[in-house]
Image 1 (cartoon, rainbow, N blue to C red):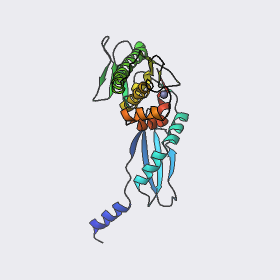
Image 2: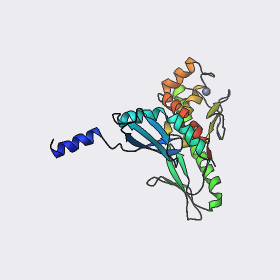
Image 3: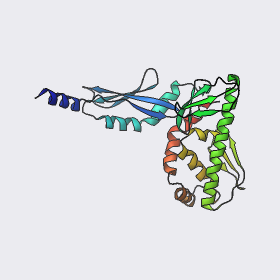
Length: 249
Ligand SMILES: [Zn+2]
């Protein structure tokens, strides 16, 4: 076999599986693959430093099948990471997901000014005295959450032809949103940490309660008619929802 062809065949039969990065809860998790000549099945374990997972795959098993195995195991990985990881306390240098994208928090050098986002480095710049950083950051996140949830709620109210009462933002542990009989909506500020389609779904869900104060088939028909990504958002909560509550601020 000519050298070039042999090298090609060897490379094809034994690809060096490239690492992959997943966002699980609020953490970037590196998936490293190992090919193992005598492995009989796919084996998944947490990396020793808890920054990722190591997947050992038998020689003939493709990276894609290994990756499918990892994706099925996301709830397991999430549980393992939580067992090893203390609660994230937000401060200078720590990371927080914003609209589903990890951002680093930087205490700015300026004495005054507004909190801003640096979209290039995915950083949240918090000027002023670092000792006020947690409070300022939380107020800012709550204000952002309120603006986006109010916009989504009014948009869905218009589409569903219903009236809304007051919209408030809280830090409720048990639910992401609620709708009172009078039409007052209440949401968790943590929804701003989730991807936009997730926040959007919660607004659709609560506004749909203006039509149906239950979770029956008619309620879900309303939600799905106006918000086709509801199923995807619900799946997101199953995997990542608990992670949003582990962020302490
Ligand atoms: Zn509901």
